[in-house]
Image (cartoon, rainbow, N blue to C red; front, side):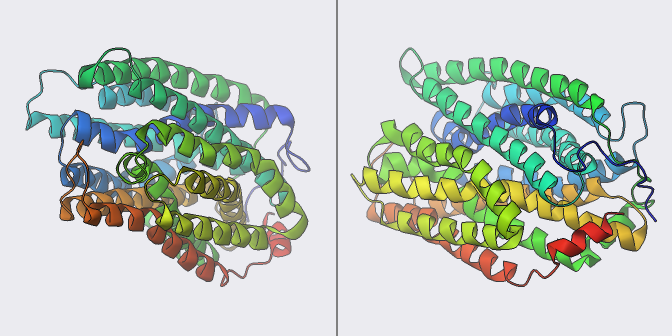
Length: 451
């Protein structure tokens, strides 16, 4: 049995101080992820002049690397022993690596040739996502260590998701500043991106250190180490039918969610004809995503996590599907649909990790081992793989329809953009909702497996 004799302080309700300090670094990490997701593809194709298919291949390959880095970090995090616990040493190490690699991505040297630029970006992007793995997997695992099954977990992951979306809104402001950077031409945008990367990299590293130092005052569950063998630990994850189904659903849903990050700038400029309103469209998504988190968490506590998450999937799919009809000048339609999609998105980032944490207790009762790091490594890999697949498909699709940057687009290109932006996520969320109907582990049973 798992050595779980000492309950964390969050037995009944997660304290507000814990919610604040645990969620704090997610502001910075969410900022970086959205800035990368929104701006990187267009920055690379339009400013650095890297071919879309090449950038799609780089981003897709970085997801393949995650198949190696995520499991390693998750397993080693479970096996770490130190005075700072299992997770916090990883958080300390991740901070400077994240800041440096983010700077590399958005401040490539001016003198790189056409052949050298993709190589530099490959190293920078691989480094960034590896550094993020070193932070994200242990940080998610720490949330499960600090809480018991049920509503406290929804609260702590809800706090993380709210902080993440708050950071995403800040990323919009940063992106808008870069797009309107003082001066003229691509050189001004490059200089603006480099300055933003330097300042934000420093700030995010500081947030991670502050959070890691502050959460030490809150006790974690006293547990045995994770799996003794890495391959066996990940086999246990896959053999856990409840976790396996959740991981597949998380992968499919994030394929749909990724499209708003990848294509909003393209759709705003080349389809709707209002490149200047791209930050407004994304803000219309992000503000409801932030404001809706407390509501979704409360609804999940009252009606259960499954029906509430299922409802949010349906709303997200329908609202994204409506974006297929976004055409030139249809600004109000895009804003309204983005708001509904954002409100629906406020749920998944809280309930998904909470449900996965609960299935870890189910696994612990069978194996006698606590493997939070292993499980969350599998989840983060699925999320990053989903974004990578969407990046790759988008790059190939744009290349296939002869997309030419900084030029008026043909009807074929516009139709491809509208289809990717609307029908693709509608399909993903629809499949995810159908699969989620098969999820069967009752929430009341989860509490019985915690001990």
